[in-house]
Amino acid sequence: MKLLQDKIALVTGGSRGIGEAIVRKFAEEGATVAFTYLSSQARADQLVAELAEKGLTAKAYQSDASSFDQAAALIKAVLEDFGKVDVLINNAGITKDNLMLRMSEDQWDTVVQTNLKSVFNLTKHVLRPMLKNRSGSIINMSSVVGVFGNAGQANYAASKAGIFGFTKSIAKEVGSRNIRCNSIAPGFIETDMTEELTEETREAFLASIPLKRLGKGEEIANACLFLASDLSSYVSGQTISVCGALNC
Image 1 (cartoon, rainbow, N blue to C red):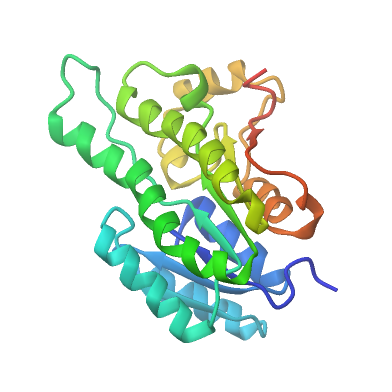
Image 2 (tube, one colour):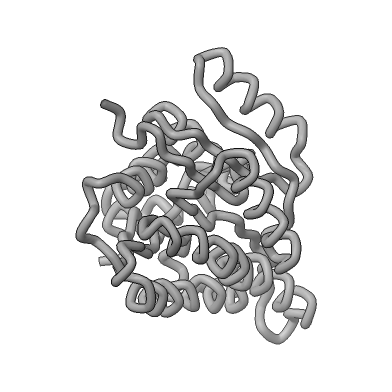
C-alpha cells in the first residue's frame, strides 16, 4: 500500500518549486492533493492535468495564504470537495531581500505576512476539522536561514525562525488529539530562484555545503512524506533540516 493512501493533503504554494515537488510526491503515494497558487494558474492547471494523465488526483485553488479570510474560505472549499484534511503543508513563502538600513516597511510586512502569518491562518482554520477527526499532520516549511540568519534577509530569517516556536507550541496544544505538528528547514535547493544565480554565487553556496551540491525539491518532498505518513507517528514538535549538513 502507498504511504498516503486515502489521505487528503493540502499544500499551499503548490504550483512551482518545492511545493510542486510535494504535490507530485504525495499524489504518487496515494493522496488526493489540494494545492494553492497565487497567480500561476497556467502552471497549476498543467500540474493537475499531468497528474490526471497518470491516474492521480489533484485540484488547484487560487488563494492568498497571507489572507486570514481567504484561508478560511480555502479550508471550507476543500472540506466541501473532499470531506476532510489529513495533512496540511504550509509551504507558501517569498523573499524580498535588502540590508536593514535599506529595507522598507513594506518589504518587512509582506515577507512576514506571507511566510509566517500564513502559517497561523491555515493552521487556525484547519485545526477544528482535524480535532473533530482526532487525527492530522501539520508540516510547516521553514529554512536553515531561520537558524543561522543571513545578511540582507532579516525579514526572511525572522519569519522562518518564528515558525520553529509556532510549530512546537501547536504540537503541545493538540498532541492529545493525535495531531502532530513539525517543521522542515531546507538548505539551498534547486528552484526557479536558484537557477537565476550567477556562477560565482552558486560556487560560493556550494563551498559552504559539506555535500557539495544543492538539494532537490524531491528531497524536501521526501521529508514531508515521512512527516505526513504513519512512519513518523511518534514525531511531533520537531524540525528536520534537509540541508546537506549545512546546518551542523
